[in-house]
Amino acid sequence: MAFLKSRVARRIFGLFVFCAVIPLLVLSGLTFLFTGGELEKQAVQRLKRTCKAKGFEIYEHLLFLETEMRMIASRIERGEPLEAISFVPYASDKGAGTRFLRLALAQGTEPFTLLAGDPFPIPEPEIMDTAHLKHGHALVMTPPGEAPYSVLMVLLIRPDDPESPVLFAEINPVYLWGVGSEGSLRPEVDMIIRDRDRRILLSSIPAIETHPDFLSRIRQSSSSGDFQFEVDGEPYLASYWELFTKPRFSLPGWTIILCESKTDILRPVSYFKTFFLLMILLTFWIVALLSVVLIRKSLVPITTLREATERIAQGDLETRVDIQSGDEFETLGHSFNEMGRKLEEGQRLLVQSAKMGAFGQMAAGVVHEIGQPLTSLQGLVELVLDGPLDGESKSHLELVQSELLRLRDMVVKFRSFSKSPKGVQEPVSINQVLEETYHLLEHQFRMKRIHCALETGDGLPQVQGDRNGLQQVLVNLIVNAMHAVEDQSGGNGLIEIRSALKDGQVAVSVSDNGPGIPKDIQERIFDPFFTTKGAGEGTGLGLAITLSIVHQHKGTIHLDSDPGTGTRFTILLPSAPSEP
Image (cartoon, rainbow, N blue to C red; front, side):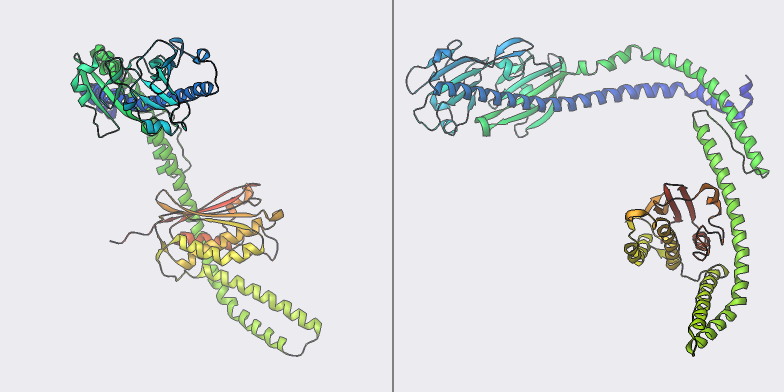
């Protein structure tokens, strides 16, 4: 009972004891209803798919039958003895058989010749589509009569000869409808075939034709659909699909209907009824036991988090917790560690901002002290260069002028720290800034044989900031990337610039396939005057200025680099507030 000393534990346990039964009852009832409805819905969808597949299977069988009829007609046309004509056997689950049951040959008014099987009535020419036969197509028909109805296939031996003999064949229904074919239909599915004259050609449900309600459910205006019906009090789900055979076989078409008993469909749910009450009681006691155990386990993470919070409040920002409970407490532990990391990062940024502020004050003094003398020296050198000088003196003065220009550029970069940018803070499209920067540096990409890929995200919100400042940030990062990849052999240098929406912020990344930045100097690359370039190639102020501008835009910049795999800088900027 020690765990009940906690108010949280008592609240959770009391809530469970008084409210667990009702949710269990409601959940079980809803599960029963939902599962039954879902099973019924899935059964209808399954019947629809199977119905269509069965239709294609029957149509494929008709094509095979037509091919066999043409083979027989070809043998007759070659003059082979009629008594030698036989069917090609096939094997099914019902045993070996032939695709045709009977075969006869008729010509004009002469009596027909039976080629195979028992005698069978030959349909009158008036009810046959002779035009279809003269085009060389096989004709499929179900002659009038009483059930069971036969299906005939008719073919002219020589379509171009009006007096050509006519080949008649009665199709084996076992083969045509695929009865007993392996994998054709599941045992619990019944199949019904109906023609356009509402005759039942095949039915695995006895006396289905005596149920007028069944036939009326099939809409003549629709080629497919589903419905429910009852046979002797047994409810069925049915789906139908019309097989269009008119163009190929001059047959108005058959409707394939597949049915499945709702009792079979809902049988999994019916088992649930038997153990309904027992399941609720058993679940209640199991959950009650587990709740006591879980409440006890929850007290340990709460205590851990409370102690860690107290240590952070005392200034120990490196405090982290290790909670592996596999539930929300573990997620809370991760969030707590992320909060500690961000507090530690915020403290580091405050230190960095203080350093940058001190450096800015120093830069302001340096700019003020050396700005005017530097301008005067540059002017005097230009005056002397305009006068008469020997070659050696002139080269010396030109070298002095070059160094003065380099010093002036350094003073200009110092000014970026000594003065806050005066750019107008306005909503800016980061994609537009990226495209302008890309076109600005496009010539350098071609000159240095560097491939640069620009990929801008769609629908990005605008950011609040200074367009020129943001462009300066991008130019600094892209130029650094160009320096990193310009030594790649064979023109394999690659720079990728992307923009996207990440966690509600606009993210811009600049990556390259250069040599990367060593781990031991990655924390120093944003420090003023720190550079990895050779003497006279850099001032070490580019990334320091970049960091300053990003902070002025209330954003963050992250580095991801491994030696040998390249470098990626990612900038996250908050989106501009929407106008009221």
